Amino acid sequence: MPSLSAVLAPTPGLPSTQRSTKTSRFLFAVPPFTGHILPTVAVAAELVRRGHKVAWVGHRDSIAPLTPRHARIYDADGAPLVQRLRDLSDGDQELLEPAALRSLWEQVLVPLGHAMMPGVQNALDRFRPDVVVSDQQALAAPVAARLRGLPWATSAATPVELTRPLRDLPKDEERVRELIGDFQLDHGIEDLLDPRFSDHLVLVFSTGALVGDAASFPDRFVFVGPCSTGSAPAGPRTDDDVPREWPDGRPAVLVTLGTARGAAAERFLRAAVEAVAGLDVRAVVVAPPGALADPPPNVLVRRDVPRSALLERMAAGPAVVLCRGGHRTVCRSLAHGLPLVLAPTRYDHSVIARRVAEAGAAIIVRFDQATPVELRAALGAVLTDEDHRRAAARLRRSFAEAGGAAEAADRLEKLA
Image 1 (tube, rainbow, N blue to C red):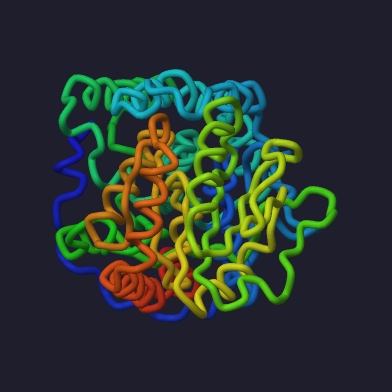
Image 2: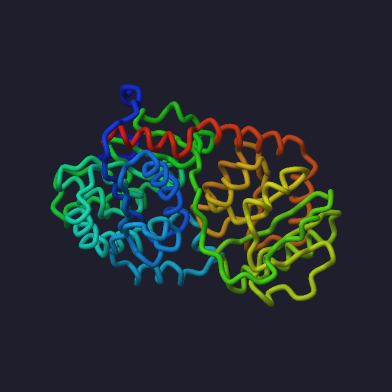
């Protein structure tokens, strides 16, 4: 299998894109992770608008809540692997180490690929796609597509793999390559390539500003920016609406840890509440019911919030988002020009966090050690420093200029 440096080496330019007039069929293969499914929903919606047919293959229970009611979904087993990943405890120091990526491939993603293969083969038989669009973490799809001679594109939900995150751990990087190579051999592919990077088209749902120099990548790597018209399923509505008058002209803070749960997450949320209690701000903290008793007067605690509407309101004045560095939350914040304070709980989060901090739009704190004093200082610095807001605005512009779902659809039509 070629090295990552060879895969990422520049290649001659591709012909300019042209809008297709034929009707094509696109099959999206996705792992059971919300942040990886949602970009495909936005692109699929654009393809359907243009008259094409789309379908998904993957863990049905993960895909169905995020796709249109009558979406065509082909089930591919993976439930045990979904639970295995959920059982990992956010905030464990081991998950912040680079070697955690090797464990992810060994314990989850390669077994997931084997589990998905029969379902992917069935989807190819029944849907008969013209193009397969495979997430980087859905190994079965590019292998099955190659076995049938089908063109395939890579869906890179985050730019993490493009940064060669294991470059400083060559043995771990080589081990991941071996695992992926062995997977291909197990399923009848002898001419090995890296299925994380299609040799036809790689759609990166991020901006080149978060990977360094985008011009250094081959032309088949297309940075289309975040594409997420869908949304994660919401729980039953209670009193989660934020009052219309919030944040009443004061600087605003949103604290959200996504899916992080457990003692470490509760400790961090308590520290965050204590931090904002000492600032002249209005804060919304997203937390499970009962996790934060008796919050101070300037803090609203909600199980969930209307995220896009809230971020839009926050963008009207000085504001900051405190989160763990997940690509989707980071991009949604930056798309509104909001700088961040980032507390990574996994190594992939730390990769994103470093890139945003290097771009000038974030400050990084330690999730497992951050004190109220440290968090208060970081939040205050981001709220008062114009440089952070200007950097976030630059990233917002880079998202808008990337082309989004329309650009992704243009490229897929050309591949078909």
